Image (cartoon, rainbow, N blue to C red; front, top):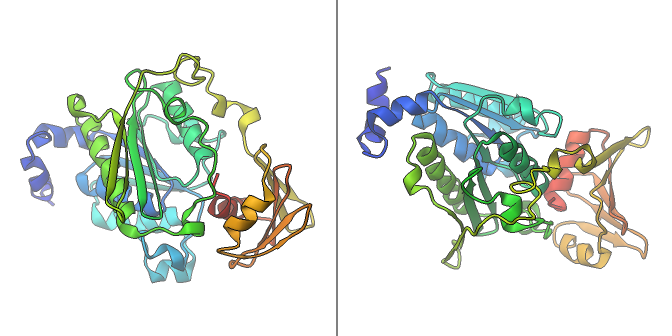
Length: 338
């Protein structure tokens, strides 16, 4: 297919043009997560002609995904296809000139360097701050920009963090502890996903084509239901930031890996994030989406998926009903949201 015809409308856009289109064809990007945000991000990048689009995801396609995860269909649900596999299959049909590489994996300290090998940009399609801080630290260590995005309910936010130019995510927003608000606890409407991902892609295209003079240096947040929008300009990086100032990169240290243990013979996975859990607070949050049983010592949560969560005040959570660590981490991320 004639690429000038494929990309003709994009080439007509003067800030990109023919030269920018050639540049895009030479670029390689990584998307972490192939859920709601990730599918929109990958769709835009592949259609735009970015030369190599790699993405990693640990989950498989479920029926509840179809409302907002645009690359999947009912056949993917019936086959329980891994999201990375289903997305790669669909995207290769959209643009055969682009290298599309879907990897079924949990992104961790052990594989983040390999996943980022020779990439020009990393895009956030995740749903938890633990992974985002891992990406943030890995990007700032090697000098690769990180395009952050988040969507829940009718709210969204996005920013591009560029080493040496802007403060990092950790520096700008702080610890990022979970609020318990995830798509599985308070829902999400699909338009907010598309808008967040579009903001991410705009900044990605600017960076990849060398249009750095118009790069947005702010975090944009909005609520599409209430029609609120707010832009927070970046300040100078903090001298005490362990990532962009002190270069300690805490998420790249073994001690900061999430403690996940499969309890042999018990069909249970234990996850300990290292901070205490207020059982009254979590009972109030989770009672809206699951059947709960609370004692002075623990909170038992019966999930609609069939598994149970057991939360303890010391920070431990047991995911009962599975020995699959990936499955347990997915459920934990959905309902606890870290």
